[in-house]
Image (cartoon, rainbow, N blue to C red; front, side, top):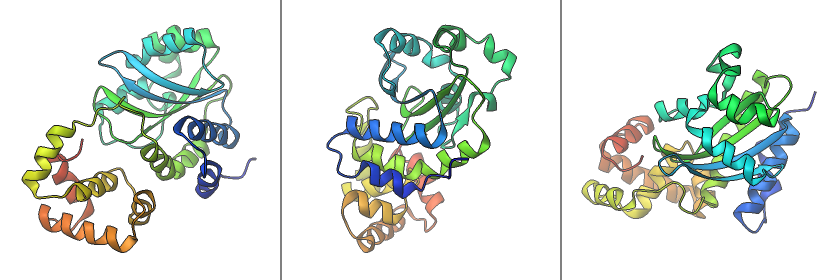
Length: 250
C-alpha cells in the first residue's frame, strides 16, 4: 500500500516552478502517483458560457475536451457543488448516485463511457458561484476510489487552495470586483483586509495566509482583529457568514 502523501511534499514538488501550467502539471503527477488514477485534471469552468480551461495528465485531446465540456453541467459532483456553495469536501460519483443510475446517466454516456472511464472523484478549489468555479478531478476505469483516497485529497485541500490562489486561472472565475469593492467600502474594510477575509473563508490558516501574501503571521493577526471589530464578530465562522451576507465574498 502506498504511504499517505505529506502535504509538504506536494508543496516542495511545486516550489520554484515558473508558472501555473508547470505547477498544475506537477500537482497532477503527484496526485496520480499518490492516489492512482487513469486521468488527473484541473478545470476552471464557466457554465454560463459553456466553456472550460482544462489541464490534465495525460493531456486531453481537443475532441475529449469538447465532450467533457458538453456534459459538465450534468456531472453529479458539479451539480452538487452548484447546489451547495459552501461544500469544500471531495466527492465521488458513487457518493451521489447509484451505480445503475450512473451507467445510464447522460454524462457517463456522453463522456466517460467513450473514454473507457467509470469512476470520478472531484474537489472544488477557491471561490465559486453556481455557474463558475475551479477544481481537481480524478478518473478511473477499474475500482472506485476508496475512503483513504478521499481522506488524502481532503488533507491536501489547503495546499491545493494556496497553489490555486498563487497562480489564478486568469479570469475563468470572475471576481465581481466592483460589487465587492462597494461592499468593502460600506463595511469600512481596507483592500488588504478584504483579501485576508477571502482567504480565511477559503479555509486557510493565518500561517498559510502569511506565506501566500509574504507577510508575517503577526500582521495577519492584526488584520483579523480589525476585520472582526468592523464586522462585529469575534468568531471566524460568524465573521465569514456575515461577510457573505454583506456581499464581501462569494
